[in-house]
View 1 (cartoon, one colour):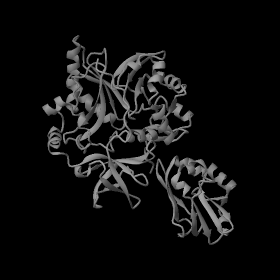
View 2 (view 1 turned 135 degrees about the vertical axis):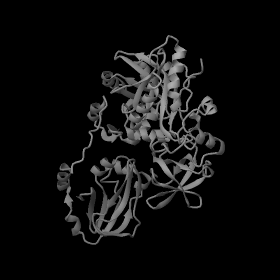
View 3 (view 1 turned 30 degrees about the vertical axis):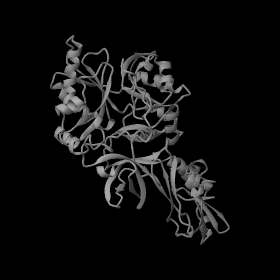
View 4 (view 1 turned 90 degrees about the vertical axis):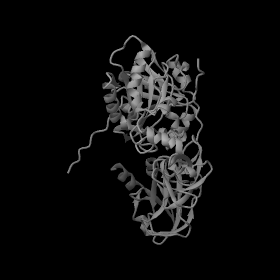
Length: 387
Length: 121
């Protein structure tokens, strides 16, 4: 019996990836470049040494806005913040114009339904910029849409727009040559910029631990911008394989793997995302569970592991010092920068001290896994001093 | 040099066969990061797992093209797994076996037949 398989979706740059000879593969329903001719290791190293260009258009981007601007910018911002805050644990009301915040969409059990970026768009009263994971975007936008509509607001996904990530120490030099002014953005800041190609929304953030930018572009601007960036010798195209290695090196969780609806922010070692005002008010989903874990300690916690031997991949059993089964690897791969396997997993807190020697089972063999502080590779974010 | 449908190559010198993975296999695997080689003295049947070659993507079994006993392994690939990507059909060899039946090698695809086989994949 024939199976009805939906065709993979394309981004505005799919043809460009194929033309570059990328090895393509499915990801979150999209036909994406896994790597180009250089391969995963060289692409990851290039990103950390120079800068890499990623097509991340599969991710979910949207604006959340009040139904009608009132003329009082602060009132509009408070209103739109009040629409989204009940779903997440961050203080959005306190965001200054142009600032981004990493936050978590929570469920009533205290678990993480997605991680996301929420930003206050400058010069746009009552408008928030939201970026969610590709695999959850339909569910996330439906849930956010329902919540904001109930309070008179609306969500406008950037349907078919392109999102490009330019990451690495040379990113600011490269991008400011094309878009003067981006160098004034600090880490977790966003702005609207006009170029020869048109208007771009540019945020200084990313998923690699390096300095870099994410650039939201109208569909017809995507290819000209992609070409202009690649014309610079400092830039190479980078696929999802290297992207995953880089974010793992940076200690960043991937939803559906290191975090999910059954893992709390405390267990995930993401308690920093619980803003102090929200924590005090306990006004987020799953607050009872989460606040109790903050008080008593969580039953398990995410740790980094330096693995000896073959890579320990997702699902590999983690053993305690006495050889008993204490957890499971949630993400694991070979680190291009450290030239050894690394992994993340959840273990009971009394095994989570750095330097604790644990084990992982790989192909029926026990290999040493040393608990390590995250990130594995230091972040190099460029934070601007508070003006 | 002869090839199997699983993309292993074997080169016979007297009754010693050198085995590795083909350039096609190395390209398909991507960057090799870890190699598991057999113990010297291990006896294998044709088609039995000889080694494991692990790339950034996944681990792959390498099957022995012929029956034989391992006489030598290429420890260079353990220290420098990228040799398998750089020179898969020369310095990236994996193991040498003393073969029971040298004629079994002749029964495998020669390079022309292997290239034709690849063309149909």
